[in-house]
Length: 394
Length: 171
Picture 1 (cartoon, chains in turn brown, orange):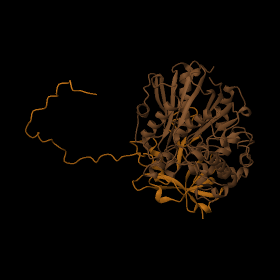
Picture 2 (cartoon, one colour):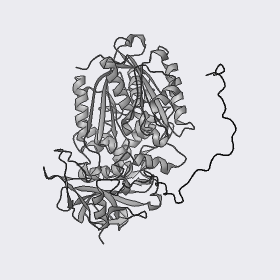
Picture 3 (cartoon, one colour):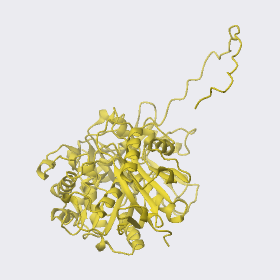
Picture 4 (cartoon, chains in turn orange, blue):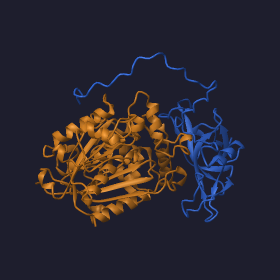
């Protein structure tokens, strides 16, 4: 039993990148943009606000973040106001919480916003914040951050399955190409050919600069309403049909296999089961390509290709527009940048845009009905999945 | 918000200089700020795992084992996450292991580690126990490391007197 049906009926994304804006200014910008983009939404009817923000304490030196963001956005919640924190999946957590609130009847009209300001005067300070996502006291002193962890995933995948650096670069090339037709992407209008990607400097071997999503400033927001209110909004609603989540470790010692992300398999099966479909029905997916190797392992864990075959899946164009399934038409985290809290919400905005067939032709999936969104967080120890279905236009 | 209608707050009358406050002649130094680095707090006053760090100072890497279900737990804990027993016992860990995976930090180091770049890190399967620990790997540049190579566990002290552990690649 899923409760009331809930849909995303509008959304916006700010420009992602190195922004000359504070964290609070990003909240103002996305709030103003949301109400301009969704004229049917009145600020006084928004009864709940969920703020996906991974590390405002460290990156903006601001706690009690939800009321701060509410004021910046011009929203005065009367039912539920809260921040959701799940590191890289904080944005999807905001959407999932809004979904649960509306499905249960506690909320009727909710906004889920995600935002992060990651470019600081001292990038070592920002890197410190990122390192705290890991088990700070036990893995942290050794210098555990995301790049060396995912580099070890890549190293093991190469050893166990023969995955190549060129296959890693194929992921990055595809997603940067999609980002070229996404004006809000950090790397819009920048071309990264495969051979150039393979000559960029190493960050954490075997991963190079182009294999890693960047430190990005940005915000995104979506409006969610119950089935009773959907008809007031003109674009096709993106119905949330299922969600699933799986968490199985935190300290790196307890990771088990680096190359089999069974948590994603569990989370996606749960979400697809609730939606009543199989992965073969999904027209496109927004998956968490925080690193190029992540997307390759995710193809396998989602069951899009046999275990170990993710490298050839992308190299053969199976995850490109016109392939078996389009993966990351928005441009992914590699092409758009990865402002932690904003990413999951921006992925939902892409689903809404694709369902309305309003994406530029270079990344528009033809007539999509089903979409899957995935975020991992931390060291791929948590996986969060949502499944959306396009509804009819009002 | 205007408070123009509110009566003016009465001002305290002007007085002579306040009476001198008695101050202790020797002040306790203020506590040092913590959570500015990654290392755990280690003293008896701060953690129930102080024995772990005391053993590190003796050159011993240890952890807790659950006496009820026999599981070896990492990191050391105060209660078993499987059977929820407390009263865990301390055991020394093997001093040798083999590299399962490794990489190196060539950019993007956190504060306090910038001067260490480049440095190698890895997951190491400890010999004879079901534990795969993450840590720094010293002794060789990252380019010379190999999966399966033997490394030794070593403990080291940091300038403020705390202790931690790392791996050293064999020559």
